[in-house]
Length: 296
Picture: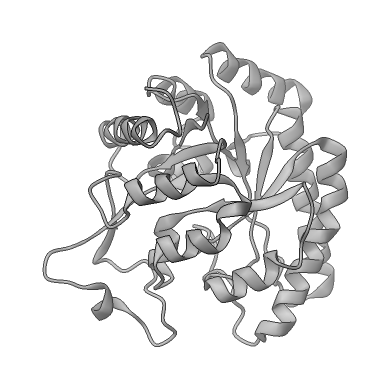
């Protein structure tokens, strides 16, 4: 059966920049009706084993698991030596994940550098991910690549934002230690249909981010579409409570049920705090049960 976890999208910068501690989030987030708490590598103050063991104990002490570590490698950096360092950092993220008892570690393509040609970028990214798979296997951690828009701390959007580029990368990688992290809202931001994107990757989905987007009154997606076919983080397309937006979770969960999905679904809620996270969690619990993905 699928399980539900929470990722503190609404507190992400606060935790990374030190205005909220990871320990504080664990106390808050553990009150939600979830089975796990997803982490972001830069939430951690240290990679010291004693510190990691403490974080692992704190979360386990709440009766929760840590399903996935979010990490954002920038494999498309123009400088070759810096790209190699990004591979090393991804490998380190895998090792930290394993020490925390985490089964999945997110990977990305990197930033859409202005002078990077698609064919060259696809090869660079696929080669970089391949270079991390031995570390993934050694540590029994599965790398999952997200259909992503943009890390909060990047200058440019994701190189593989469009599904055509994303698929060109993942279709080069065949390993039990590699799969797909699916995010329906990121498909909307890419100017694509989330259901269409899911059909393209449904047999390879290992983890999922659940979020939702709604249009402010008086606006349409067609109006927001940019010259490159994407929408981006438009002020008129807002994060919000899951189930109140554009994503069709009945259909998304129906498709996942049909392919026998039994992985994690992680709440990546908007920017308005715990009350909305609670409502999103309750919505997802209900829909997961209705679809057969989880027990009521």
